[in-house]
Amino acid sequence: MSSWSTYFVGGKRFELATWVFDQFDVWDAHTHIGTDKDGTRFSLASLLKDMDKCRVQKFVTFPLNDPRDHDFTKPNSAVYRAFKAHPTRIVPFFRLNPHGNWKREFGRRILQGFMGIKLHPISQQFGIASPEAMEIYAAAEQHSLPVLVHTGHGLNEISGDLEKLVKEHPKLKLMLGHAAFIDVNKTIEKLANSKYVLFELSAISIFDLYTLIDKVNRKSIVFGSDEPYVSCEYALESLVHVSSMLNITMRDLGDILSGNLGKWLYEI
Image (cartoon, rainbow, N blue to C red; front, side, top):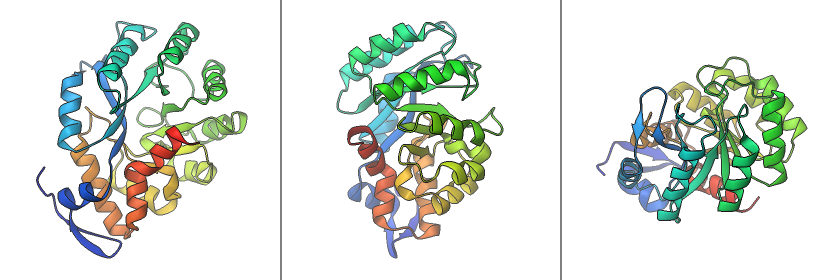
């Protein structure tokens, strides 16, 4: 991996590609494999190639929005096979459709050792705090299973729904995919102090990235790329560039790159 640029973090000058990867593990909280309704296809081999290029040690992976399977049974099985082939690198999340037979799929994937759930309100057409979604959150909370919910493009004012969700399920491990950038300031105001909420940084603008790292407790922020829609190289460069602008500490940068996600998945 070639060096992108020179940055200053914690008052120290470094070349990104050499220094960052020598100092910290990098974990990606948002990657996909499979086939999407929009025509995207992304294989496990392609994902591994990109993760190797960015020296990402572990990555959360879940299915794309496959139009051929209403309940995501086959796409989730593909993630399971990928996990079995690469158990030290892939953190498997299964995708659910609140309008489908999700209880059967939930039970199957729990037994297989999946570590989290992906929900997408736009693709599966449900409200973040709708009754059908709340049933899934309740089951996830009961099993201490993290939920990554899409909070990006296609949504509008969601901070109220997110606040309701957190109040009704206070120990649910909730990861805000794309960091609720469409309603970021109100969401920060309502949720930034929650122990069980993480702001995941994939596919957000450099301006929102700056706002989040500046205003949110850095223990509540995790790196994500959104592969294959956003390259991990671009996502990493953006994160380190903003970290340099804000002159955050090296410890904070390390926490965002991997430490926070590691503690959240394996310790809380």
